[in-house]
Picture 1 (cartoon, helix red, strand yellow):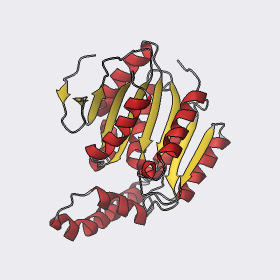
Picture 2 (cartoon, one colour):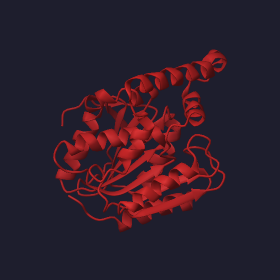
Picture 3 (cartoon, one colour):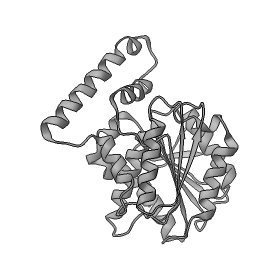
Length: 275
């Protein structure tokens, strides 16, 4: 795979290989060992993402990590997903072809939209993405107005100007999006994402799935997550729901690291080898 490898200072050891796409390769990398495919939440700061990548480096010291970051523009530019995701697709495909396995971990609706687009692009090769385990953190939600507003506002720059006008601008964007969807009969992109995450054509039902979520998440309701988990079970998926009591959106690991990473590793251990 030919890529431009640009070091990034904010994620130690990671090289930028494409649009918002980063690759970590340990000195002890073995292509027959796991690859961790991460899809971060919208506008996640590198220092926050690094807390998860550091844990994965300890849990899987010989594993490559592919990180696909997400920003608001990426969510609304799904038509260009193939071009943006190609570096990640090529890296994961090389790994799978060498006999390696894949753990997929996505965060929030932003990461959810990206993992769905990734799975759709992979399926164009005629097979589903051969995951051994799938982890879904703080998702999915159907894009209810108040929660969508909170999520987008949280992604804005923390300057006085954005604090002054950001909320109103987000309401305007949501209004225009609603009008556009209504006029053209389009499904809300978050509703589409929720539906496609449970598609048996995109995601193999044999792959164990873990939902990590919180009762106090202001951006994605616990009821939405549990409804989606029930729908996943109804189509034959092996589902584990892990509810946290007080953690914020995409911050559940801070409440109980053992509970969080224990669920991840349990799914990995029970997952099938798929090729």
